[in-house]
Length: 255
Image (cartoon, rainbow, N blue to C red; front, side, top):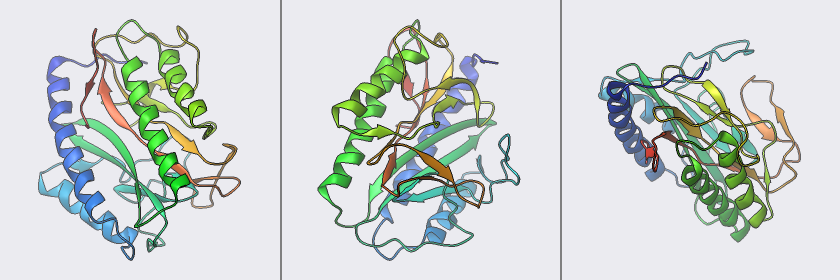
């Protein structure tokens, strides 16, 4: 069911989004060759708890999962698209990697979700193009997210940027509603046709999250039950913001 948030809910989301953005920015500062994914996880949990908030992903069990997610942060490196687990088999970042940090935050009972892909040291021009394209696709999706439009308009806008850069989207992965739960309706695809899908209404809160890849877009799930990777081993990037739909430009609470 699609939910419409109250003004009080939106106020909490805006404040939570500010806290969320601060934490992600602090984590990005640590991204250098030699840092461990465990160090990133520990700092994320520390900063979340410092302000009295909660990690939305920690112990969250999505539909179909065999176990709860064991960390606050998702750290996905290179061919890992989403949901890389940072604390079970810690990974040391090396020069030339690209890494996605994906965080969920609960502030006053309201959930925000945001992700960013960051180069580790000096990376290839191809990898920078992938990151740039993913960020541009997110901004295009946000511009299409206005009251009266449809989720298909968002997917179409993202898809046009994907094609512009001659890239592919990670097949089967999408954005979603958020706020009261980590994942709510509606499904927010990264492809689509204008005027199709759920209609966007003021007060809806969604997470828009293009996931672009250098290869063909086919994906597979690793044995840990959470980490999705590209089937061909090509690199992936992921960019995400939580937004509030209005009759005009959306409010990007995790900017």
